[in-house]
Length: 91
Image (tube, rainbow, N blue to C red; front, side):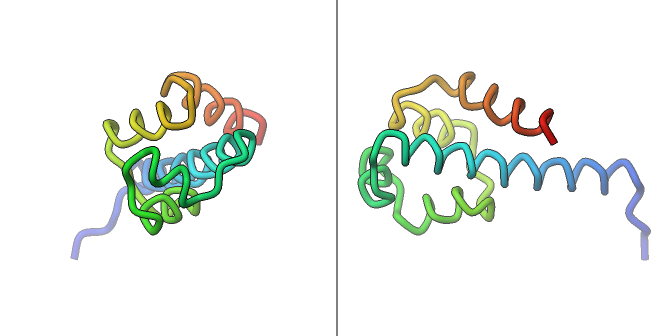
């Protein structure tokens, strides 16, 4: 059996952290707009479960879905990515 190399493991950990932080930022922006999870899911045309998984960092949304979610929140995806990056740099 092949052993995972350190580079792949590091990438996997960083990606999981990005997923968690992306979800945290989405939740913060949703709450800032005073939207419930079902309301945002309807605006983004996602299921409530999908949105819940994104906010919990359990989902790996496609770039197009991230863009749709950003638009539903009234922001550009680049702004959300900047917030995620700021969060990662502050840790």
